[in-house]
Image (tube, rainbow, N blue to C red; front, side):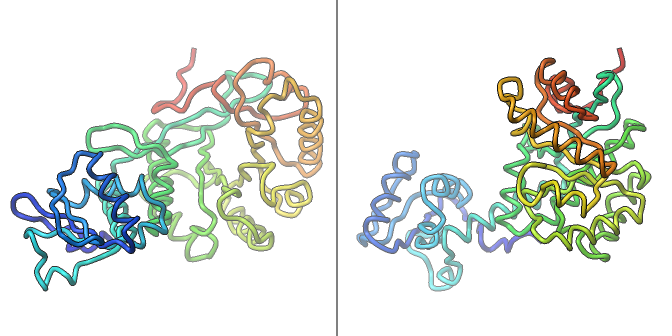
Length: 348
């Protein structure tokens, strides 16, 4: 749901952005920051009340969000008025800068999702024995500004988290991935990042699959859910139950970010995913760290005993690829084999 539009009123002519600050130190800082940003101050005669000319609050909020911490933004109340002095009716629309920022974030993200201004980039996952043999693609969402410029995934998910819209964004990312895969006619596995709370109940999983697969027609057995451990997983039994439900549907599971959080050797034997993806922190500088290579080899050996395939992420050079092959890794992913791109890798 988009925010209440009354939070961002439209004023005729040049408006007045009023700010009520908790103390003079805060008001002095706010005044200096907005003057430096090019806004024109309108004196109020009140030390704790600051006013600047502004066409809209949207032009002011990004400046304040960058300059003030969240707890400080909660101590500044704001109002946009079409008058040099707010009317009694307008005083009912005062909100903290923190709240206005969250509502503005929800508004632009909501518009982006409604307009489907997002796309999937594909990064290949290759077989360790033959780097031209692509077993699948990881699909990575990117947002699009109205001018076509990309919005990085971290910006999307940070905004969605602060605005309470993670479920909607996660659903959009999955829908875009399956629609893109179907559009290219891909036969390889489709790796899709999924936030566990999106699908951690039977109803949630059914809703996700219905919305995400319904339009694309992609087969469930082509999907691999990458469960993003670093963001959400903490309860081993919940994860085990989730994996069972997905496998019953023919959907394979990859535990992402292996080497962080609860992801450990005892955990994977209990959860029994189809894949583990070694975090790039384990593959970075592998050439210069013998202890790290030994750790990777031990992880691979334990995974093989449980019939779990290992994918190494962050592979950027041939020497690292060879060392991972010698450690027994099954698949490789990284810039060496392809940057995330809007199209799948073309055959030579």
